[in-house]
Structures are given as C-alpha cells and as structure tokens.
Image (cartoon, rainbow, N blue to C red; front, side, top):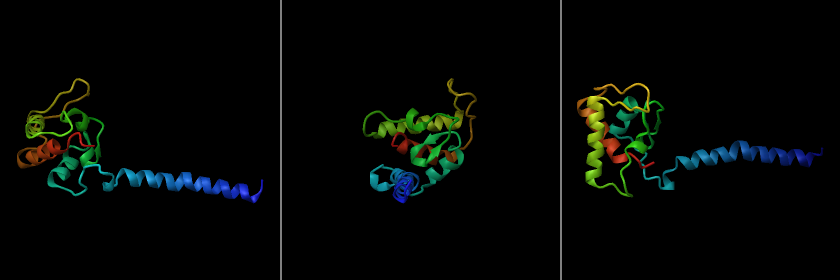
Length: 135
C-alpha cells in the first residue's frame, strides 16, 4: 500500500470517530434546534431529578429511569397544545400517584405512597404537568 491510501484511511477514520459523534451529541442538546425545553433549572426540575428520575424517564428533566413508566408517553396531553384543563388533569394524576402510590400491572413492583409530600410534591406535579410529552 502506498502513503496516499493510509492518509485517506486516516481522514475517514477521524471523520467517523470524532466528527460524527460530536455533531450528533451537539445537535441533540442544542436549544437552537427548537426542542421547546428550557435548559434552565427550576425547583420542580431539580426535585424531579432527585426524587423521581431514577425510576421515570422525562425528557424535560433529562432523566431516563427505566423502572417506572416513561412519563412523556404516559402523561402526554392530547393535541398539539395542552390547555389549562389538560394540565390541571395531569397535575391531579401526578399528585394522586405521589400521595397514594401507583401500581402498574406492566411494571414489576410498585411506587410507594408518600415518596414526597407537601410543597415538594406540588413542585414536582407542576413541573411534570407543564412538561410531560414535550420531548
């Protein structure tokens, strides 16, 4: 083999190993891509990440828990834009699950009641109701 073949192989390898993964990771997390999710932290987001993210996936929180249901799928409001009634309904569902626990026949185990209560539960429910299904 000649030197030109090695140079071309090296350039292709660099493209595959460095440039393409960088582009994919950069593009996925770029707010300029109009993902609709604010990158700023809110109390609800931080509380969700800490208390719920190990089990539940929620795009807006950046969590990918694999034990409980994916809340983007389970709680996404119908239609392109959620109205106040839909958001209030999701908030009520989340509060009920937090207060009473939840049992999903498709998921082994159970979410126990009272994992969080009071203001913490309200903040989490508000965050989930405003952001579920927006990923």
